Image 1 (spheres, rainbow, N blue to C red):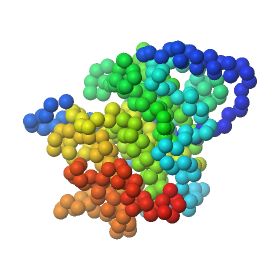
Image 2: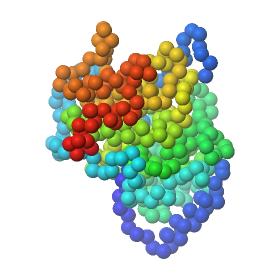
Image 3: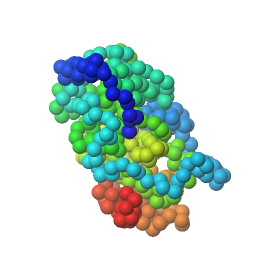
Image 4: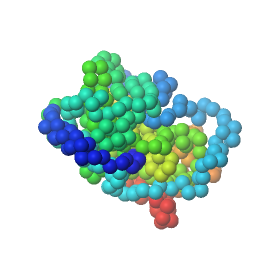
Length: 385
């Protein structure tokens, strides 16, 4: 996210910053086919517990639009927001540079994977809550060395049960790391994406993990934004293009987010930049994954073969999310199996969603297919994205 500009510090703070980097550098360390039925997918924790996502600033309780009949006035945009030019004002290529206001050298990397050797209180001031959920809390914070605003995510340790902490071994690191930390480290490898909220640092305490994340204001979760604003198809397209770029960058970097949905994207309402957050359900991208499905949009092949793959599952999730963004509801199928669409949406959009939601994963669009599809291409030709 874009960070607010901070005043230059004196030579003393510069020395502190250099010393901390020296400390960081020295501290580097480091499911068989079921014959009856597949394991039940793990419920989406946000919906199951009716709690806001702990990674999402300023998130409201989620509403399922498929079960509600809302007066059209509910979706009218507030008077103060001009939606006539809802277009991103920042780099759009997958390899675009990290925002100018944040020094990439602050990002934790594979070369220094372990938790901070210093306590949180020595490096950051912790401020008010900006998100609270079943597994933890997100609070605003200030980096003491330079006054940089950050988000601080506190994640409770869970040693038993189906939501017990998972650990992942990543290339270049000898010991398994807490899964969300490991995946963030993979995404901190260049090239960096401007469509992902990056991890700056992390800490481990007796009862919790603490992640330091990029943060900027004004920021809100994309679900609440889409729910509130009466977006045109063109406006929705400019947001979804960024969302697809974020998901593709993850897969290109060997990361399977596994929980792609509007709630797990945030938007800076001053710049209209969209970024992907919360890798708590993620996994290292592999050719096939067996076992319980963790995430929001379980693909149909899971119930047929008890197995799913990273790219087809991500495409399925994106198809549902794009449909929800444009049509304000989840996709439905007719008796003949075809998807049902609002007559007001374009033929190109209907074609793209139908391709993304093909029941056979081998017939589903790829990530590159989505980006090159006419629905996005017509916007690029107009210079909007």
